[in-house]
Image (tube, rainbow, N blue to C red; front, side, top):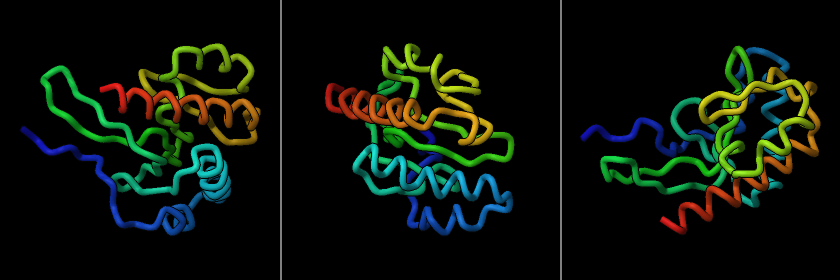
Length: 140
């Protein structure tokens, strides 16, 4: 059975963000460090080489294997900011209409830049997503 690829690392999330080439991604990443830490009450931890996570979520897949992933997190990718765990909460879709310019994938929320979205709605998605993921981990 292969080991999970996305595991917590000792890399400093702030150093990761500061090393980003694109100035908007760097500024948005630094803002998100504060927003997500304040919203979750958890410190930022690097998961793999590119995901900044807050808290953790333990799950069991269909084959019965258990793994851990960030409860919520983000990755400042070249094309967009990718958010993890923000759309899992059943009522998250109710908030997306007021978020602003975004896309939703299978399990991710994509935003071009923070200036495109309502930060109050984003904060609410973070809080709801974090609480939901932590509760799911506890229920498992």
